[in-house]
Length: 192
Image (tube, rainbow, N blue to C red; front, side, top):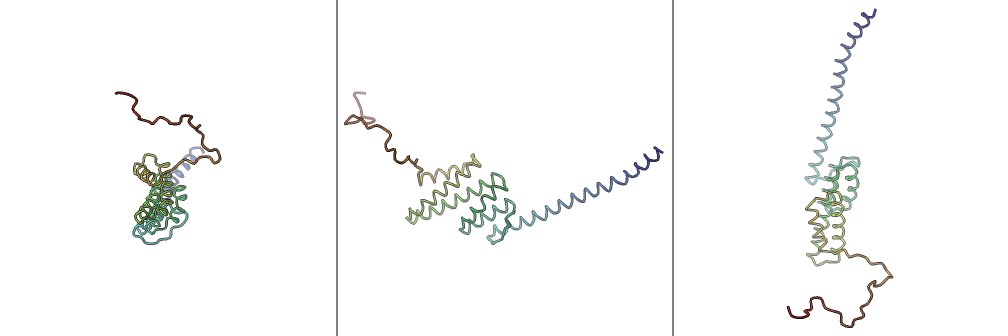
């Protein structure tokens, strides 16, 4: 009886395992096929956005597609739309993708500021430089070794300086000197 049961189980397993492996292979092929179709469609949309075709992107799209949409919006001169996508790119993508978007936003604002400076509209350029510095700092927080971001932040810092804000109402904290004529730095005091 045991031998008959063992023979029956062995024959059953001999039939089961090939079908199970075939089913697993078909499931794997189906998943791979779905991913291939999805990535092909995503590549098509990224290329269309690169050609400056206005393509709608779903809110739950991948970070790569959202980044391509943000770059399209920047090329079209719509930084507010690109900034709205920054949080979704940061949530779905890698730190490098989020830093890339912040870097591109900083470049957009700095280019706009230079255009205003070239037209001698300095008051309009100041807020744009401040926005550029904000985005460069965000990019450098994510990618601290990005030399281009450091350089562009340095350029923006030279255009509009960040001065520390002193607390109001406290006045000068240094006591006034009692000497009528303070010493001048570098004044010679005798022979060399």
